[in-house]
Amino acid sequence: MVEGQQYEDPGRPKVEAESVDFWYGPTQALFDVSMSVPARRVTALIGPSGCGKSTFLRTLNRMNDVIEGTRLAGRILIDGEDVYRAGTNVVALRKRVGMVFQKSNPFPKTIFENVAYGPRIHGTRNRAELIEIVEQSLIRAALWEEVKDRLDASAMGLSGGQQQRLCIARALAVDPEIILMDEPASALDPRSTARIEDLIDQLRVDYTIIIVTHNMQQAARVSDFTAFFFEGRLIEFGPTKQLFTTPTVKQTEDYITGRFG
Amino acid sequence: MGRPWVDATIAWLMRITTYAIVAVVAYIIFDIVVGGLPAISWEFVFGFPRRSGAEGGILPAIVGTLCLVLGTIAVALPLGMATAIYLSEYARRGRFTGMVRSAIVTLAGVPSIVFGLFGLGLFVLFLDMGASILAGSLTLACMVLPTIIVASEEAIQAVPQSLREGSLALGATKWETIRTNVLPYSIPGMLTGSILGIGRAAGETAPILLTVAAFYLPRLPRSVFDQVMALPYHLYVLATQHPEAEAVRPMQYGTALVLLLLVLGLSLAAILLRGRLRRKYRW
Ligand SMILES: Nc1ncnc2c1ncn2[C@@H]1O[C@H](COP(=O)(O)OP(=O)(O)OP(=O)(O)O)[C@@H](O)[C@H]1O
Ligand SMILES: [Mg+2]
Image (cartoon, chains in turn brown, cyan):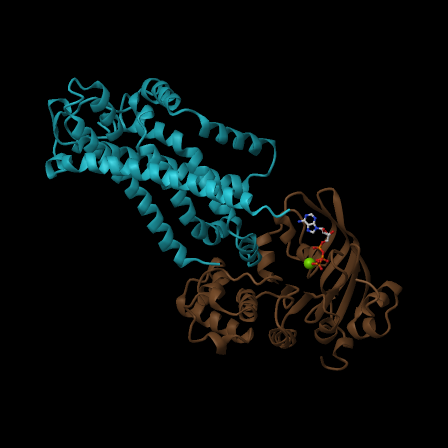
């Protein structure tokens, strides 16, 4: 993280949540969450297990729509457009807002097919073009050198860390503007985790990244801004440095100093 | 509370029942093979019957059963798979899907002769198809639908949800996700379950008795509106209706053996197919 970078004017927010409430059937999981995520920065979501980090993350690309009986109130704006407005093209939204899951989920297809999957469904048919996209995406995801000789091998043969980077490459291949990561390194060993963190550091220049993490050091290392959630509410949001050194809310302080959670 | 002899006894009881089952299967197969092999010849398999089946071959019955199997597959497989896809991927869990599921379970428990009567009433008479391959295949299809739906649903549900989410998160539509990331991995299971079910149907007599099977028709079918002979019914006729039932015993065994081989062949094909497709997709 470049010193001072986080304080330069981030311009208009990329993602804005306005009084978001969210329900799984009868149980409410988010309460009145409002937050502005700046463009081309890394924003970390932290908080104890079950506090609604994943739920909030999944409202941003409407992945919660997949779950039966869910309901959202309030607004989620991306570049000022309400993504829950009737008539929103969810497919186009998810193309702009990529997602990397906690448990890497490569398709049981070849490495090439995994990365080419997104561009294909979005209409890229030209083989040469696909090859170019796959190569570029794998390079950006820092995986190219390891797999360039076995693009036609099954993705299931990769190590856990490689699989997760493949999933990142797969998300990059559709050229998103925002990348959501739900504990992308929680199942990985320290070396793979370090690689993912390096990768996030490189991607921050071009993408707006929102990352859920349980690891306080990781949040401090990779993020420019941090949001602390507790029991479905956003307790505190601010520049990472500030939040970790001089939290304004007692609960935040208790959490980051390890007094609960 | 260590009473090792209880454990040992239970293990032995289980072992004995398992062996008993294997013994029964082995005896049935042994009996049919020993009785049937002498009857098997080029003429028996590829010839036409003479003197109401007392002499000659069983080609029309073999072809008839093959036609019925293909017809059943053509009707039941797409219908069953579509239903399974709808139920597990699209339908919301509610009262309606609950009713559909109970209907499917009930259908699975209906005796095959009732399917025969139903086919006679609906396809043969009401829809005026007459006794025909079409009516018989449709009847058999109704009978195997529950098996196909249940097997297909299981296969679909075995595909991890994380793959669907991965695909959707890339902006794939629901159908694109199903087509590229659910069906390819579940089709092996769907096919295996379905073919096993259809193999069972191929050996059924009751459903075809009233809808397609001819007592004695020594020629090959020319269209789906023709009646045909069929192996299980031919076997039944030879064993119980034939004036010289004792004398045609080898023909009965031969027919039984051919039927057995056909059904086992189907199962084997299903298993090989599954193995091939499984190797392609693993997670
Ligand atoms: N599919 C679901 N159906 C019903 N309730 C759910 C569902 N998913 C999450 N919840 C509930 O919503 C609340 C928030 O869950 P969420 O997964 O967002 O927490 P989280 O902060 O991501 O936790 P973790 O750190 O353990 O991943 C929890 O109480 C959880 O039990
Ligand atoms: Mg979570």
